[in-house]
Length: 377
Ligand SMILES: Cc1cc2nc3c(=O)[nH]c(=O)nc-3n(C[C@H](O)[C@H](O)[C@H](O)COP(=O)(O)OP(=O)(O)OC[C@H]3O[C@@H](n4cnc5c(N)ncnc54)[C@H](O)[C@@H]3O)c2cc1C
Image (cartoon, rainbow, N blue to C red; front, side, top):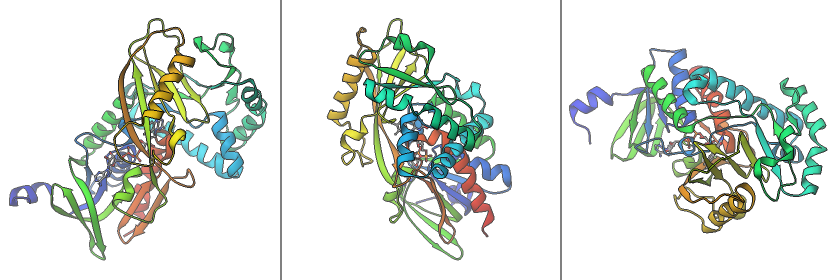
């Protein structure tokens, strides 16, 4: 319940209420203010810090490893696969332009996919020319994938048949990224409230009433934009977006760690990189897709032990380590990998389903949602 003073200063009817302060919600808020500075844009986030995938991810600035693109091509036509890849590439440029490489600690490190068997390695090596040709045709990027010079020593990996390099991939610091986005949004006059969890909303011709679970208050807005990604099903049914939980581990500092770049394994399900002299490793969700279709913050022991084995047997076979950090985060996935940016009810919009590459897609998806809102009365 608000006092008169609280209500009159902070919670008068807003022009656009955005739910969720991840990369999509913050990018949408910034783009709304860039296009129309007079607009009152208010963002509500349930966590005391942003609590979704944006602050829990691995910091890969990627548009796909060769086995992911190849797998996508076996399910969808080239036009669909490369138009999404193109949006990821454009999204990464848009993100870097909006915030600067220095602020988000972007490194143009390149990325590798590692293959454990000769059979897999030769299968994907033979696809390099075909997929590079399609990439160039659809996106203009030349020679995306190649066999790297460093192949001879494999960064000290064990049980590895070979690597395929993506020269355009990069890494960034996800903590710096979300902090920079929050600061940018505030600098444009976006009001951001943490600890506000939306439970439901009602829309009519005058706008939208928002009902929050915590705190127990009601707020009015002319328009509502849901940027709740994998949590969307808790507020709204009927959209093809489901939670997909991901586990991340960070080791103790490793002496003489050789890793440089982002590394993918198993069609993108597993991924690892160096951060401050440690190994950050995530993945294994494919081992229990059903169990990981959840927003619960708990660790699946089967996946945890798979990731630790990957560290011991492949990534750090000769280095002792302990696990010093572990956490889970929630992605939003559906039958296809294309984000849903739609006007779902009168005055209500959504920009959700970022899949596993929301860092690449988020900035443009937020901008697209902002344009859609501005195009409707
Ligand atoms: C473990 C993991 C690793 C990943 N690694 C990478 C990677 O390396 N590279 C990459 O490109 N992508 C990666 N991703 C995916 C990427 O992080 C997401 O696609 C992206 O962050 C989605 O951004 P978003 O803004 O749509 O959603 P989110 O960042 O999830 O933001 C949604 C926000 O909505 C809030 N919210 C939800 N419900 C409510 C409510 N009812 N009321 C108020 N607030 C609410 C949440 O707290 C959250 O802050 C990873 C994801 C995970 C989980």
